[in-house]
Image 1 (cartoon, one colour):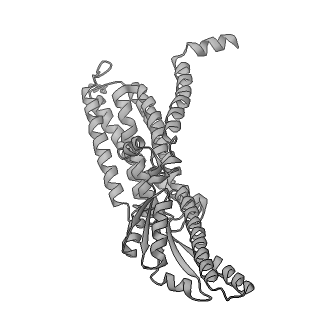
Image 2 (cartoon, helix red, strand yellow; image 1 turned 180 degrees about the horizontal axis):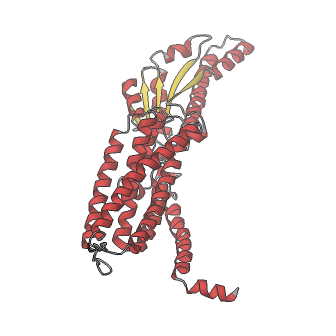
Image 3 (cartoon, helix red, strand yellow; image 1 turned 120 degrees about the vertical axis):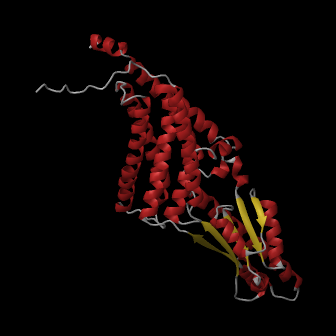
Length: 389
């Protein structure tokens, strides 16, 4: 066994494998610990649109919500406009106080209703946070209504204690919250599809790029297989592979119970686009730095998992990771997939962003190939000798 161990340790590939495994630990630890460090404190970046149509008690509630909640509160005059912002994910919840809210509170046997609308076409954490906020607001407003009712009861000095107690108990549960969800997601498996597809796609393209790079180094350079011939062949492989791989991935997701609001074709075409973009993005580092470019790819894998919004809403990230995510393809892959799978404003803008990133990466890759010197001697392709008649 010891001789075999010595032989393994003599091989550069063994050392590279050990170092790579260690770098995964170092890179993921640094990026994830710094990326998620301020998530709890950054809830203040979440936005709630408040639409108050009631000039009585509703105005008081709106002011208390704005003063007490640790979120960015936007006061909107139009409920329709607020819902449009929710659809675009500009806000995370819409709170609606109807025009007859005060009258509902003052009417015997009727409850005042506050409306909450949450867009489920978001990371699951958004729904959880906003559900808690909605329940908290309803509880607080109930206490306010109970206090106001108690003051009214005490003012009526001629009222019997038992009657006053009964009225107070009726007032204590005078307000109810009605939570409505747009683009509801049926189960947890569907909620996790964007993260799964993006993770599988980037890791797969990263490993594919590494193997293509090794194949490139092993192919001798000839007049027909020079650096530009190899580069062109890689692009053809990338395009064909992205179409087929996306078809397989989408088919499996749908066959195993996945749902797509935008339809199968839209899902397939969009995954084809971001798969191809991932291929160009990950192979750019390999073309520029050789096999050492895998270290950059490991770092980009970790950064994109943290900052893409697949697991934690981007609004909760630090300004550094939030800004960095604007330039990374996984951000637009996740957002576009959410729009296609769950519903939303459409994936057109995300597809455009991915196309721009692909063009930039393709241009930089072409420059890297052009600047790199041809390795190995160029040999003429072998030609069969013509037999003499």
